[in-house]
Amino acid sequence: MAGTWRAHNQKRAAKPVKPATVNRELDVLKSILSKAVEWGKLLESPARMVKRLRVDNRRTRILSDDEQRRLLAVCPKKLRALVMLALITGGRIGELLALRWDQTNDGFLTFLETKNGKVRRIPIGPSIAAVLAALPKVHPWVFTNARTEKPFKSVRQVFGRACERAGIDAREVTLHTLRHTALSRMIARGFDDYTVMEISGHSSTRMLGRYTHPTEERKVGALETFRSSMDTKWPQSPSERKPNTGEASEIADLLKDFGGRQEARTPDLRVANASGR
Image 1: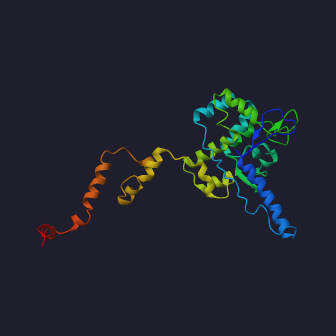
Image 2 (image 1 turned 135 degrees about the vertical axis):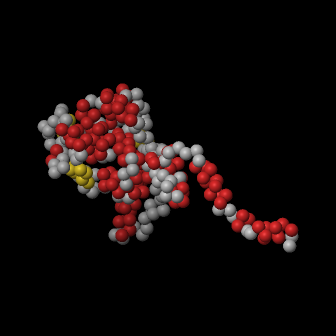
Image 3 (image 1 turned 90 degrees about the vertical axis):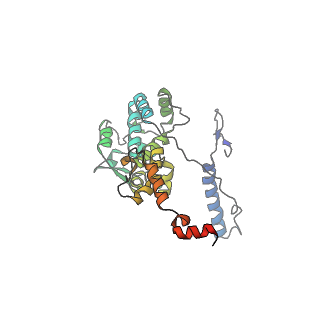
């Protein structure tokens, strides 16, 4: 934690300030002071040597198939549609809440209010189309608060209550878990990084590392790629591999056949070395 803060007239306990929040404020302050130096108001920025806090915000929690079924079963109708779209598209909740019906035309979902400011379009497949068809087109926004006739600003509390009803720890599972689950499943099922990047809006493959959770089977399959380079008859992927009790003996035979310096010497030379000549 980097400290706590309490809003004006806030009666609840002070909220913790996360390192990422401190870093963003520090970046703004550094930018202001750098401009002051550029304009000749300061000789040197006093924040020049101040380091940013270390941030480790990787969230590895994803929903299991059973948790997903339980969660969807207890969600109110609109929240269920929102959760389903998040699990299908991997979109951020803020992007989905800001989505308007006129951004669902021409066979694409068009996200205008994105984290990096870049417009992102993803094709509307059968699953997305089914979710959209179940929602009323009364207001401009796909997810509209009927009381205010404006888009929902937050669904965090109602989502937390749904998690509790589903028997899921709301401290472990957040709205962002839905995005993490969707993208992790895409990668786990073999879709290439660049396809997932086009869907998620990430600008580099490095950012996708947090969504990769290889299973033990896939790790074993990766370690067995050596065998495929030695014999084209050997299976090429984990799904093609079948139990074979002779695999270990094959490797042992290879080691025996490909002997080192001692085995490569001629019998006569070995006898001569043994006799000391």
